[in-house]
Amino acid sequence: MIRAEQAIASGYAAFKRRDFVSARKALSGVKHPQAIHLLGLVEKAAGNFSDADKLLVRAAKLDPSNHEIANNQGLLARTTGELERAEQSFRRALKLKPGFQSAEISLGRTLHDQGKHKEAIRILQNVVKRDPRITDAHTCIALAAIEERDIELAETHVTAANGIAPTQISVLNVRAAFEMERGNYTVAEDLFRSILSQGGTQADIHHMLSRALLMKPDPEAARAEAERAFELAPTSEHLLFLADIYWMAGDISAFDDLVLRALDRRQIAIPAISLLRKAGREEWALAALTETPTEIRESAAGLYLKCGLLLDLDRAEEAVRAGERAYAKDKWHRDPFHIVRALIATQKYQKALDIIMEARARDPEDQFWLGYEITVLRLMNDPKYNELIDYDRHVQAYHLPVPEGFETIDEFNRAFLEVLDELSPFETEPLNQSLRSGSQTPQNLCAVRNPVVQAYFRALDKPIRDYMEALGSTGEHPSSVRNTGEYRFSGAWSVNLTSGGYHVNHVHPKGWISSAYYVQVPPETSAGKDKTGWIKFGEPPIETTPPLVPEKWVQPEAGLLVLFPSFLWHGTEPIKDGSVRVTAPFDVVPA
Image 1 (cartoon, helix red, strand yellow):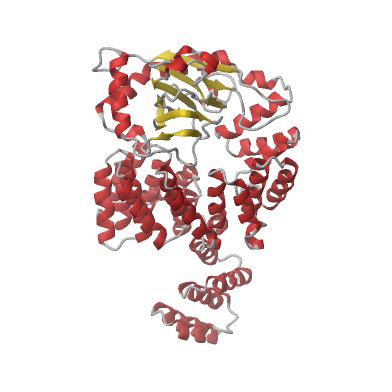
Image 2: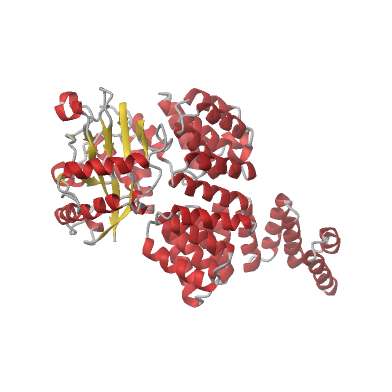
């Protein structure tokens, strides 16, 4: 025991001065769990992550009740990007020692990084209740609240963090992110540049600076910063963002070159192949996936991607087999919508419904799964379908009240068009959106401080409240049950559809009430021939047997606002005459 204690003390002293050779010499061969634990930290600090992982696993087996070992396993998993494993380790540490602050903060960050923002907020609010001086907890809550579009909560915690450590880089970072959300892009740009001048986390800050510049909009400067971020850290996030900039600018050569470079990097091969799929290069994407190392193509992520590609290529039975293997490996590594689509395509409705209902139980507010549940119920002729869908009640059209400062709706729409045109710097649509042959503003219009835009949002209040009142708040319908009588905007944007342009059928997964407001409508849409440019409801984005056709259309006109539940499949009939259709959609969620 004395030798173990001496070895640990000697090894720790060497570790603190980053003398890893001496630390290894002192600790190697010592079978005490604390010595093995410390040796794992030495290897982590030295960048030998695989060795560090083996040592920490060994230490945890020898001392399974040690919360510090579990916490350090989580920190290592975060370092290597294994967020689900990190989450499990932090939860284990907290089970061993409830209220363990380091693990709570790290768990909150990990949940935030996985998109589990509400749970991250809940956990971290417990931290600041116990100790309101924890800056890291305030900054992470603020970032999660920004993702949830809860600006009041974000402002509370940005203010708290700024009051504690106004010059700390993490605080400057969250202040910049908050200013972006409020539409103060120049202020955000200045803050990000200040962080860079202080030697902040270079790649991430270049990435966020690029986002701010894109919103201004300054697409050329944004492109340069996004390229710098990818060069410094070729992560999935940086890859997808840069690819989208190339795609929206119509620079297909740069897009293809980026994808080819990414395919050579194992850690981002899957997102690179996903980009090919989104770009309509399914054959190339499947071939690229086939050529990846076995551990990549046979991973849950690889198999889910294969399922989607095979389905795109009308190979549904093969898609089911790939999807079932992925689901067996990891149900939720990637939301299993590909296997659900494949099961529907092969008429295995009950299997699809079982997965859907498990996903719905996991996140009852996810409108995506509710949309697929309705699709399967319709195919099964289940009477519950008619309980969930009532087009006369759920799809409502309103003439927008004339916004303040304008005499007529035509006058407002002309002014609105001018503003939206200034905010639309790109030639084509983003890769991850529903529109085809068109463009979309990169900003969240909720954050745009232009008086015309703000007048638009004020004018929306009455029709939204009328819709909520008609929707009701009684019963068990998934839309009505969420109705609190108050709302907040969770996002707003503008879309230009040009010749051949349309929206593929889609839902808004994070919404509650969705919309289409028509600023400008093509003459052929107004004429009503062949329903060109009309919005349609009820047609899913997959082939079914029998085919599920739209169950309702609405003819657009300038000044018309259409409101409907976010779970309802909706798309548009293509425009044909070369005119431009301009809309300003938004989502609201209960407040």
